[in-house]
Image (tube, rainbow, N blue to C red):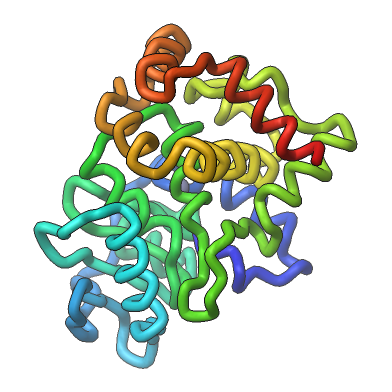
Length: 259
Ligand SMILES: [Zn+2]
């Protein structure tokens, strides 16, 4: 989700929204009787929106160009950017009323209420490599929440740099630790504060990218065991891909945050 447009006054509802974010809600049937119209086609997208609604396609193209270059991807097709005026409108068209956005990577499609997206589209792109647990899957999407058009290449979530946010949580004793207790999907999703959990995953994956390199992180995704992969599977792959244990990487990440 493109959190940079969220105002402080709606933070409480944002937390609830994130809880059901990224396709983890319980969709009902769509009620719209006509398909969402095609607004325009760009170099990397087919943009759908209702008449009068808009998408910041110039910003989005600059983001997509940056993300694709980072990931070393030549996309096999254009991604469908489906923009809605509200969560209710998204629900009418998709049957999913409980989120600000969700991705359907198999169909090269994502749905959002935001005119800029630097999260759901990352799910579409990284699905080409593989699908790890939600901790790592959300982590890479958050780690890619940059703003290339503004020259900002650090990751921000809900308006805050993910490392700075985790540094504050750590010093307040609020960071869920140890990491091994949260890297699988169910305990990650059970963290009550979803803004914290997304920043947590985003900071750790960003750290992996910064310290181990994006090619190694991509390899970690290529060997992923699916959304429900076990802690044992994650541990084995961490050791084989990064050459370090999960605890070793956790200690290095926490040391970085404490500096
Ligand atoms: Zn997501």
